[in-house]
Image (cartoon, rainbow, N blue to C red; front, side, top):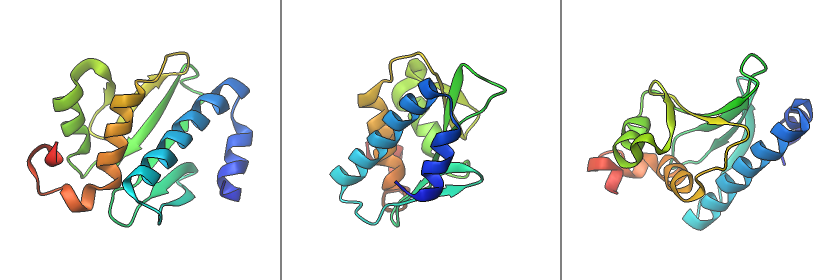
Length: 134
């Protein structure tokens, strides 16, 4: 784990750190499956961020002002959230065109979320395709 990201994880409440580590693990797993060996883990805007040369940045974070939730953020200038809405409808809760919102206590929809992460990690290669090639 990147040192800055490790320090950020240390600031989360224990239950939140567990859930966000699941998200982190899923991003790393999907990146490995996609062959994104160049995935960079860093801290951007104070949030754990994952950057693929062929994709769009994925960030996630927990905010104390919304203690029951966390968000996974995507670049708002992409078609990612619109595509997720088209493919998965009410499987997710959306925050505009920039984030997926989750409750800390919910079971993550891993299959659907993994597909969304895969689209983000490959975005530059597939952005010209209808529904990002799905």
